[in-house]
Amino acid sequence: MKNKTQISPKKQLASYTRIVGKLIGLITLACFIGLSNAHAFEIMVSLNTYKQSKITDAINKVEELKADGAWFIYGNSDFSDSEWGTILNKLPGKHYTEDIVQNNNAYNKYSFVMGKKPTGAMWYIEPAVETPGGTVLSSTQIGNKYAATGNNKIMTMCRAYVGDWKTEVDRCLNDSRVNGIICEPVKDAITEKTPGIHNGIPQLMDACQDKGKKLIFLLHAGPDGWSDGDWNTLLSKLNGWNSNFFKSDNVTLVIQNYDTQGSNSQNTTSDWFGNSGSVRSAMLIGMDHAAYSGAGNSSGNTGNPIVHIGPMGAFEQKITVSKITVGL
Image (cartoon, rainbow, N blue to C red; front, side, top):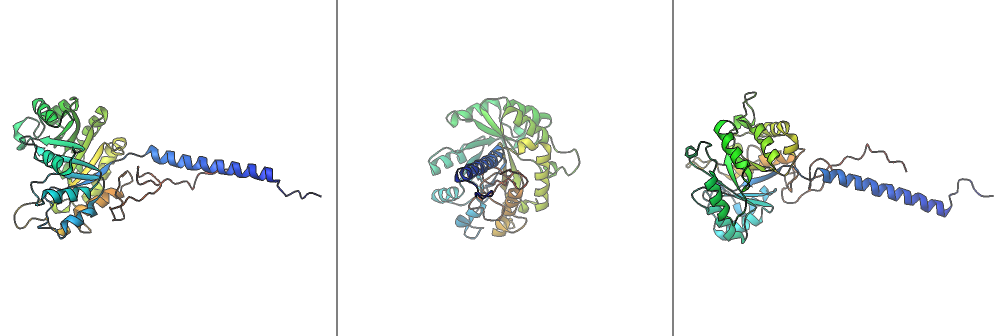
């Protein structure tokens, strides 16, 4: 007499096939959820003021600042061309250059050292009183720099998005030769120290999103008086002002240490790499944010990406599937 609980090999195979099919479907769903958030804001270090005369083992240690690339300006540093090549190769990803309108020094240096053009190039006017919009290039200046790069789109810089700043930035946003805006805001504005006083940064995010342009924030770290708490606040503000745009790779946070003044300059190893109030600690706070997508990770080892599953972007995903019920 046939045992009623016994399953024929044919039915058993069919059951296994259904199970495998559903598991494949679940994996596909997980991958789709992860890829749907595959783009989110990026983080990189500014090499401005990075010095081997101030920082112990600076060339090798720079790898601890690896995330999504590097912001290159060399005038306040002390490395040779070959050393710059080593440093930039230790910070793979997107590389941007910064120059004042009078020259193309960083752009040319990068192109020579790396044997290729940078990902993007920014020019600005200093002192800022030369145009009504402060640091923003004129249309003629944009044309000159566009030509200097071999007709590649360029970026220019603002410090606010109100009044004349807004007028000049809007002109650039409507210029097909411009692919992005750099914003170097004051701390009290980007942290909205006074409620409602933010110098138009939320509106700038909206405007760049509407025009499909990149927005890069030049920000500061502990040595410049920006605490770790300020960093947590500004991340919250940016995410709250325009969450969809913030969670895109059209937003980049560049972290710099700009204190270069005299013998008391806060440009030491600990100012760059300390556990708190440093350039590196600011980077790690950014990497801890749920919207972060990049190749760094919040464990402190920025050298190799950690592949998670979920709302952390292309390289760091964290998809929670425990609540998905699959009938087998």
